Amino acid sequence: MTNKNCNRTKVKGLVIAFLVSFTLSAVVCPCECAASMWSMTYGGTGADNGWGDLFQTSDGGYVVSGDTESFGAGGTDFWLVKTDADGNMEWNMTYGGTSLDQTYLVFATPDGGYAMGGTTMSFGAGGLDLWLVKTDAAGNMQWNKTYGGIGIDFGMHLIQTLDGGYAILGFTLSFGVGGGDCWLVKTDSDGNMLWNKTYGETGLDCGVHVLQTVDGGYATVGWTSGNGQDAWLFKTDADGNMQWNQTYGGTEDDQGWSLIETTDGGFALAGNTYSFGAGDQDFYVVKTDELGVVPEGLTVGVMLLLSTVAAIVGIRYLHKRPKWKRW
Image (cartoon, rainbow, N blue to C red):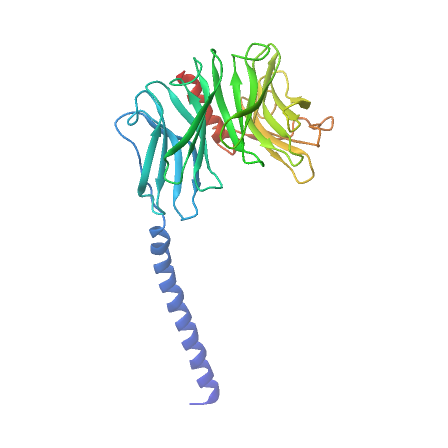
């Protein structure tokens, strides 16, 4: 055999070896990938909802929060479920009384436990109250606090603040100017109230998402009602005193549902609009400067058709509405 033929044989051998290796990888990979995919259900014979929150834990498992009518003390209770990486339940805990208790958010705390925010009719001053529950790493309740008056007060969002405490965003009919106001409650690390502020006028004014800004203050997005509803963004200092507020919208109903602080010091909010877009309800995104201002002519922002209200903030929108209808 000549060197030329020998080289060709070697090349053919390498090509065949590569093709065999590639084919085997193609056969094995789907099996390996499929092995990491699964679906699980958790619940009983009653209505059980996982609309609270979901995140992956440091051990590769998952924590999901929601509410349950199948388990617990009665009525509807907070429900916290911990799974392994394959979705197998490791433990679950319920929190609540005999009436309506619903959670909207859970997150891991620095001590390895969990904080859950929601609304309770079982405890508190009466009607509906904001409810904050703190647990250890195994879901055992360490403490809980309610906030509210004799009217209807419910929670919308919860964050842990830079000082280790919490900021709870809610809606109140017990306090404020009237008609339903946005309510921000600041607590220490044990849930003890440090201060609370209401924001709004005589119409319905609701905040649904709060964040702590780089200057230590707070920014909140939601909507305000006058002639229809407008998306609403306002900024406070570290003590909850309003520094500025801006509205965005047209002649129809427009709402803000989610908010981030951008790298240039401004804000971006997302929500839904009936005033602009292709028709009916559309996705609404607004980018502002550090004072919430949008240059004239750009207030429509970036709008995409939202026929199913199922993108980014639309998911939060779907989370919230069923809870309100059930009250």
